[in-house]
Amino acid sequence: MSTISKTILVTGGAGFIGSHVVRLFVNNYPDYKIVNGDALTYAGNLENLKDIQDKPNYVFERVDITDEAAVEQLFNKYKFDAVIHLAAESHVDRSITDPLSFVKTNVLGTVVLLNTCRNHWKGNYDGKLFYHVSTDEVYGTLGETGFFTEQTPYDPHSPYSASKAASDHFVMAYHDTYGLPVVMSNCSNNYGSHHFPEKLIPLMINNIKNSKPLPVYGKGENVRDWLYVEDHARAIDTIFHKGKLGASYNVGGFNEWKNIDLVHLLCSIMDKKLGRSSGESAKLITYVTDRPGHDLRYAIDATKLNTELGWSPSLQFEEGLEKTVDWYLANEEWVKHVTSGDYQHYYEEMYKGR
Ligand code: NAD
Ligand code: TYD
Image (cartoon, rainbow, N blue to C red; front, side, top):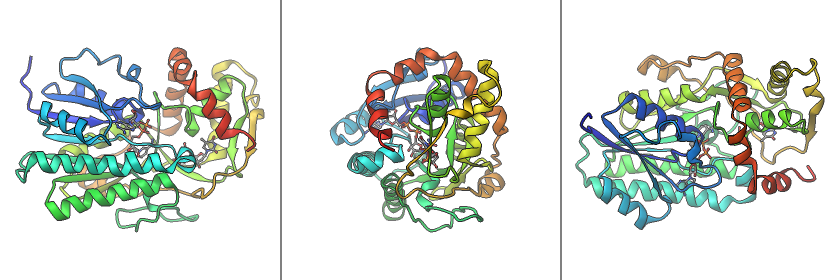
């Protein structure tokens, strides 16, 4: 057994991106102890980590990051060298119906973690790091052209993006005020396995499979820049090890899709996989009332991460999408588990009368 060189708290490690980050770090760095700190909300699922749960350098701790005393206890127990902070409320539609829980977890929770790092590291910052994982949605929306760079001013429009923007500002404020060693990244929309089916791609896959209506918001003209989740996890690995303290890095797929085109592509991939005739799944497309404050277009310029740290996306979108569909079709139990109970209620409430 190798000796432990670093103990890292990954918050939100039972969620979609967090589970990919935990898996990558546990497998690639046997000398790091990875503590997955997660409250296991509706979005957190330990089944996501079944393949690595027995590894000697992995531990799970159930913790709510808004609970100062519990976070303090965790830091006392593990004496963390670094935090990779992914825990968040992450779904825009939920933030529109319940903004306060976004403020609690995304803003208060982040400040609790920053404060605890500051108190525990006591100005002795050698080898310490607080890595904040954020989103491109803090930049607001683009028109038909242009890209978000690290210099684009923040202009969030949803309670979700406003709460993430506030958390980003706190992270940078702790760097500027207390010298806390921080690094941050702002990533575009992710897709891949273990994605909770409230977000566009897994929701559409699940509905296509079950021949349910495919709810496209507005005219389906909104554009997102899609990145394979394992490429995001690799970017986090790169930035964690090579990022400049106090810097932020944009992460994106150079891969823009209008929602409606993406839904058509998914329909055609799934027609083939499910043995349906061409065009059959697309008949399920239903235009529904738009999301309020719906950002038109996101597109990331990830040049800085590419030129300074050498990261680039590895997968073509069609290939990634096909792998993702295959995963969902092969993991019916996972889907059944996360879509039973509360999910049905959520779905009815969110989509009724739209
Ligand atoms: P997710 O919703 O799938 O997972 C969030 C995880 O955080 C869950 O495991 C949940 O149990 C945990 N959590 C929530 N509240 C908590 C609390 N109070 N204390 C402890 N744990 C709590 O989210 P995701 O899509 O994996 O996103 C992870 C991070 O990446 C978020 O910070 C998000 O803003 C950011 N991000 C996401 C995307 C995307 O496309 N999904 C893109 C860019 C950035
Ligand atoms: P989503 O996956 O919620 O990510 P975000 O809003 O954070 O970008 O949505 C992606 C896009 O898909 C967004 O433009 C909203 C749209 N959308 C639909 O058209 N129908 C849906 O049922 C959902 C969940 C999203």
